[in-house]
Image: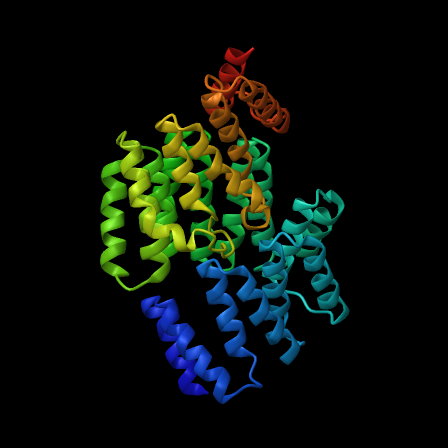
Length: 387
């Protein structure tokens, strides 16, 4: 068993070879069928690879074998959330509560499910449960920042991110603090606040050097048009993680495509995203962002004036609500759907009404947003042209 732990940790962390790690976990299962650890490992890998149903099956067995580990409840609840089975996720939370188990991931998932069900009371309870607890409170503050950004309240989101970072640093977790800042950079860039997004991406890189963090920062820089720096970072990631499944098949295609998009090469961007097709439904881990390939591909189709293609990509963010959770790209996808419909309005007059309705949906969602956000000003101008 100790050898299995060493080998799987090597593949998961040192090289990032998820398929090799899965093979070792499967052998571990055969040799020690009553050990829940390989089930959790295979559930994690399946979720990262985008196979949420397989993750659910593995994590269900892990919980059956070990019902006293809060990680098992968090993993299973996350699987249900990723599959849009929010009531089932809540049932898992109740089981954990019955056993008086808690953990930051479990509380985060509980908050996000409440957000998806529009249960503000449960969201507040989750935040209150994390208050004053190191390792808990910063996680909940960071996800609150995402919620504020979901409604276009960028300044509030920035303040909550700052507080979350301070608490993470007090807990000596530079990695978490930097990840919060990198996620903020992705939000800000898509809001049109490019200088702020670039500054946050660069500041995050000075705090920590984790691979997912570097990937998020590089993606933010690429989307902001800081192409040279994004390309250098992508090259370094490729060199450092040549065997890493997530880096090679998810992050690097997204970064390269964003670079191509910033260079006004949308067709090239779509081609560069082909390696990500098999795992674009990869589940985020804490603050990693879901459906990046679909979001960037959708932007490329918009640049090509292909409304049908763009709508198909942004609809993925709407269909997989549990994966997107409360990250602001899910809200922005509503605006991008409106833009996609508007592109089709010339060929199909009925699409004009559909575009109007989609713009109205987004503008209603952002009725309390910061009034000077570039993306909001642009959305209002586009909507006015449809009248």
